Structure formats: structure tokens, C-alpha cells
Image (cartoon, rainbow, N blue to C red):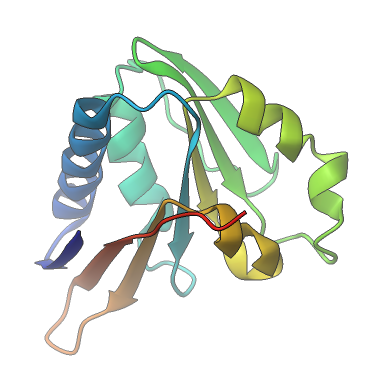
Length: 149
């Protein structure tokens, strides 16, 4: 599956996250799905994630995990973990934040700044890339992967 869309507003970006989550819900996976979100600062990774978390059924606030590194949400479709790895200085820090436990306990992991831990590519199910579009707004590219690890 490859999806490419132009998103004109933050509302469009949240809606794209919700649409993506709806597809994940339809798949009804039995193991954790790892979604890697990449893009420049301010490109919309958290906004996309906010739409996804709400579509999974969370009704409260969806905060950026920039300072906490991880925000966890109990939803009607399983627990969702939203991670921001921007402040990681070494990929081995994933162990310290309990990444392995998250893989075992969460239905979906939304990981911003996966470039900070390149080994995540081997377990990723989806890559979501958000970038600034030349005509304004953002460009969204979603590709599905088969994990190798």
C-alpha cells in the first residue's frame, strides 16, 4: 500500500491520521504495529498522530511526547504508544525507555524521529513521511513494509 496526498491544513493532517488508523483497525492485527513517522520539525507528525489516536477511540487530550518521550493511550482498539525519539542521543536508549515492553503491550506504536534509532526500520510495518509541499501545505507519503526482524 502506498498513499500519497497533499494536506492543505492541520485539519486535513488530522483527518489523514484518522483515515490511516481506520485502515489499521480494519486489519485487526494480533501483534503490535510499528508506524514510523518522519519529517522536518513542524511537518505534522504529531498532528497526524493526534488524528490516529482519536480514531482509535481516545477521547481526551493527545499531547506531544516531545518532553515525556512516550505518551500512552488506552483505546477501544488496544493501547497506543506515541513516542518522540528526537532527544535520544544513542539508539540503545530505547532499552531505557522500555521499548521492548511497549512492543509486547501495545497494539500500535507511533514513533516520531525513527532516524534516531535506525534498527527500528527492521520491525516497521509502515513508514509515514510528511514534508512541506512546494504549493503550501504538506505532502503525505505512507508506505507499508514487511518487518524483517
